[in-house]
Image 1 (cartoon, rainbow, N blue to C red):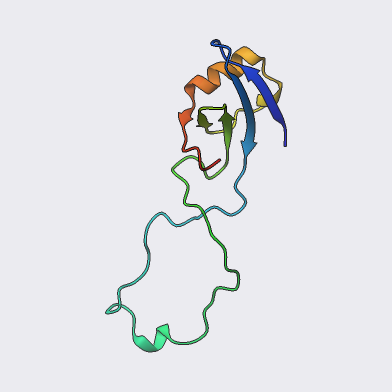
Image 2 (image 1 turned 135 degrees about the vertical axis):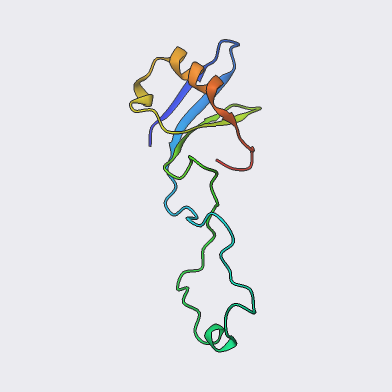
Amino acid sequence: MPLRMFQDDGGREWRVWEVRPLRPERRAGDRRATARDVPLDRRAGIDRRVLAETRVRLTHGLAHGWLAFDSDSEKRRLAPIPVGWDALPDGVLARLCREANPADRRYG
């Protein structure tokens, strides 16, 4: 996975890399049936899930990946991932960073 470092117009250092989720949550909403919709005998039995995992529900447009921009004080996301982003000049990366959406610092 390529990692680039660049400075924006204000001299702030940024790191940028691409994120491609392996198994994003595909469901858009809560699809669980209510108790009155499904007979009790159908709910009984072996759980069909074989892998216990946490999946992140991604906002629209992020399921195919994004560029993550990270500085000491801010994190941003840009989707879709521009082709050849890792070979772009620093000035173009700085422009893409300005266009990217702010992201929660806890997540990539």
